[in-house]
Amino acid sequence: MDGKEQYDSAKDRPLPLEIEHTYPDYSLYGIEDTAYGFLTRGCPRKCGFCHVTSKEGARSYKVADLSEFWRGQKKIVLCDPNILACPEHIDLLGQLAESGAKVNFNQGLDIRLVTDRNLELLKQIHLDGIHFAFDRWQDKDIIEPKLRAFAEQTGYHRNKGKVAVYILMNYDTTIEQDLYRIQLCRELNFSPYPMIYDKEHCDPVYRKIQRWCSNFIFWSVPTFEEYQKGKGK
Image (cartoon, rainbow, N blue to C red; front, side, top):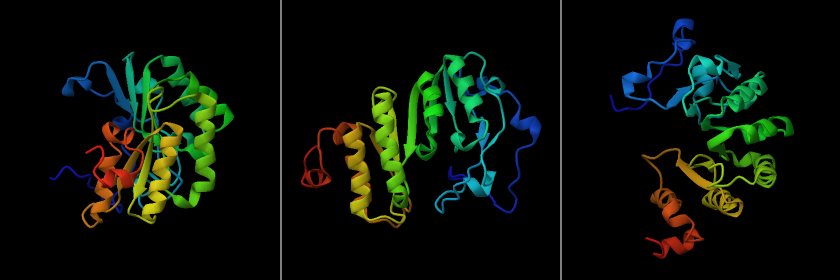
């Protein structure tokens, strides 16, 4: 195997209950202070570049309480594809806040679904990392104001709260649209995380953009044009 995820959408089924609700044996991997798991699965967005809907369904639904994979560890890494779309997400966010553990939403939160109510709970969670996605340029008029409001209302940034923004490139956007989204991250002091949709056939410029967005370079070289001229390399 090449390490890539393999699945057959025709054979996809929910995990058997005894597997979904089994407490992980972290000792198999020598993990002691971090809990990994899913509180929800599925996503209603049906994005053409994502296979979550094919694998887990076109709705977000609760599959576990936090206690099913967390027993006091200092850190929690959540792998949920779209927890804010789950009808029970308020209760689940409350469980995370009550845990007192550092929480990393590693698959991203849907910024389009952030409300005053769930934002108050998010601010109560001890964040070790939060990711949003600005993948669809068509959603710019929704996502950009939401990102700005989040920054203003929380004061979180790339260091406080460790805010990062996934930015899909080489799918249905122009280079200019990609750079606009990246520079929005600079303005908000969020870390841009550009991802290439088709790595095997993409123009080399996309890999250059990824290298420029490295934290070691991006914050000292303000434009991609300057990076291309050799600054920061």
